[in-house]
Image (cartoon, rainbow, N blue to C red; front, side, top):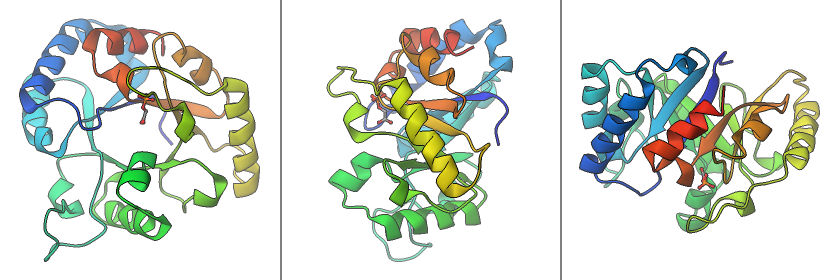
Amino acid sequence: MEEKTLVVANWKANKTTEEAIDWLRRLKQRLRSWPGLERVKIVLCPSFIALSPLKKVIGEWRLEICLGAQDISPFPAGSYTGEITGEMLAGLVDYVLVGHSERRKYFGEGEEMVKEKIRRAKEVGIVPIACITASSQLPEKGCLLVYEPTRAISQEGVYRPADPKKVSQVLSSWRKKLDQPTLRFLYGGSVNPENIASFLALEEVCGVVVGHASLDPETFFSLLENAV
Ligand code: PGA
């Protein structure tokens, strides 16, 4: 289990590589001499093609930022046109998002495929961050779990977060179901600088996944400030 609060920025299908590097340049100014990094771990999930250039820049600028992929192939290396395998991602990222509701909705991913992706990630030493909306989707151990109610995900920049009290109820019932009373989850869905503290205050929550509010470096930094 992570000790620092995890803040995962899920950029989805946004930002060219140039824009991604510019975002990092602007965040770097803010992070310089920010003591909060002792308590927060940033995981940046850009597009696949921005991963390598961002890794290089993060190294050069000595930034304390981890990288995550937004997806991973359920297949090994081979004849799977267009796929990005675990082996390709190993060494490039520490984390990978799996089972995001947008992948389930737009790309028809089902439980079996999500399980296979989790297996592939673990095989190559990448930590899966499994997004779930219902207890029937709770995967086996060895993943970070994100509770992301589909209707709480922002739409075209409009936030519609879940009620933290309801999130707490759901997550405590899942802990009981799994018989893991100390298990902690990430929450995702319309997290922004104004509401992040209300989710992190929950005993069941150890971090957040942030989509829209991570796209602007100033907004993202305000969110980090409110996470500590
Ligand atoms: P949102 O997206 O923060 O824009 O609601 C979160 C997510 O879908 O991971």
